[in-house]
Image 1 (cartoon, rainbow, N blue to C red):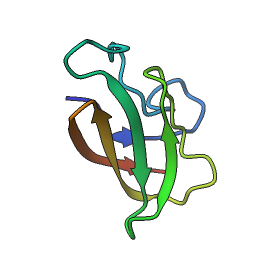
Image 2 (image 1 turned 180 degrees about the vertical axis):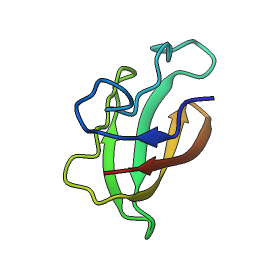
Image 3 (image 1 turned 90 degrees about the horizontal axis):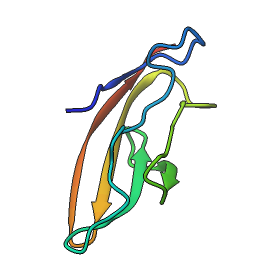
Length: 83
């Protein structure tokens, strides 16, 4: 399970939300996109690269939600951004 706390303060710990080791793709269910939303459901970040890194730039502290999209399936969770 990925870490769900983001503290982008430049100390090198939890400065960026990413999922290390996310495969580029497979024949069965390739990674296609991550989307991050604010608490009102407005998209604030999206990326189609498996080595994405979201640092919460320009976003206020709070809880954000993400969805990972793979071929025909998806998964998601939440991230707490602490300033």
